[in-house]
Image (cartoon, rainbow over all chains, first blue to last red):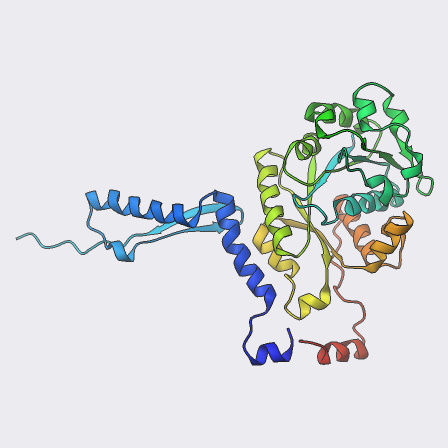
Length: 85
Length: 266
């Protein structure tokens, strides 16, 4: 990357390659498309909501990995329990 | 003697599997090991050409499997390296002419006589790959620092694990140090982080590879070439020796460093 690219703030292409590969490899390895992951998230929210009050907007579900092990990581904030009267 | 079977594979075509097979084999032979390479790319054979043995083929892998000749008759001995042998692929047949079981039986025979049996896998994830991987004790995945090659390498690593032939080791081929330095090529560390496997070696991009292929002489026999030295290091690592990675760029003299400083990007 030359000085001109840096001046106009263009990202080095190797960095872009790495970022794009990181995403595509996670989906390749699990055979799960982003659309399917969204569907999974919606269903998961519906099921959990039947048992416990959660904040549906704040739910985060993503695929992550450590080495070649893949993880489905869900972060599901609970709604504060209302005091019973 | 019980030799080790190493399969060299990649998923994507054109990343340098055949070059890697020929040169690791030549380096091992030069280091005194008895080596045979098997071209498993039936229908698209090229290992003979890279090794400069194309004019000496009489029988091939399919002739052996189908019983038209004895194993020994299909082995071509390299005149420059008397420890190096080639079993060429058939050119007029396809991958279904050989089965994974045939490859296992063939390699069981070869193990008795050779220290190293290197199998040059065809590209792809189908029958040809399965044939090549079936007898493997170790697997080398060849890739280039390019998005499509890395993605395909990841896929093939997954398949190798599924076949319980892992863990595969990585040979990063055709790395251009100048492009890495300027941030326009994935560095070895980036590729290793993405693929999460062990590194067997890095081979820098080197014109000598093309020149030597033109002449039918493995670049590993050219002691002056950087690629040749990289393949020798890989052959030593394969034998369990700890060999540090060679510096990516030749020359750390003042002029080279100044050149880099004022070149594109630092």
